[in-house]
Length: 71
Image (cartoon, helix red, strand yellow):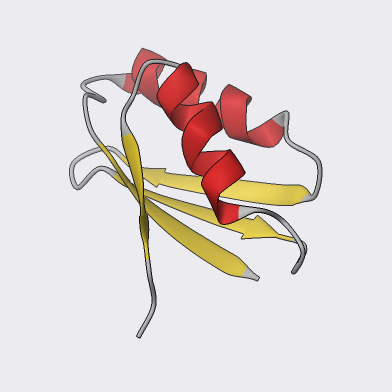
């Protein structure tokens, strides 16, 4: 399952590394793709992975995250 988030405050590769580490530490996450310029974070995860828990982990790492709901 693919989950997408909009993340604020990422300004450099160090920020990207912090977000990637926070997300990859979560159970069920397979990969994380981060687009620094747009603030997009795309997570590949198991279907039962909690979208809100991922957003909370990113926010706890210091970067406010909002899930992007697919239409």
